[in-house]
Length: 208
Image (cartoon, rainbow, N blue to C red; front, side, top):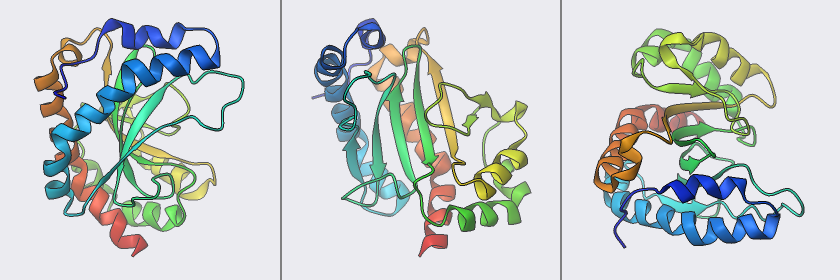
């Protein structure tokens, strides 16, 4: 199945009341698109990262009452799971699509990764385009442009605080035309991963 782009109803999914009802819509509307995106980038993803990568689609299995406010897919070198490893994400909130290189709080050894980044902070910052976004909490629909961020402070927080997180990449407002053009969006995802792959690989070296 070729990815043809997102649709307005994908974003409207997050206004559906009820856990079961919203999950049904996520499964029918959005998850097949996550699979299609992965299918189109899989070969280049492996080549760019230099590691066989595996698709994980969020199941939101722990939820029993409240419907999810966002949903995502993850690409990780580990076949069994992604939360305890550096990984890439493609996902949606009600008003945007995000493509992240993600280091979330469940990651063991994140202090060592953060220290490595801080040791060469100037090179690290220069490797990320200024128009990219950065976030410190994957559970909040918040991010700022790298050019406006205190990147070193965010890295310090990630390194020293147990719940600290780090997400780098791009967010696209739901009005952005690129989201509705499958070919353009796929090209953008590939470019983002290519740009961030050196950071991804360097963090894997720390953990190995």
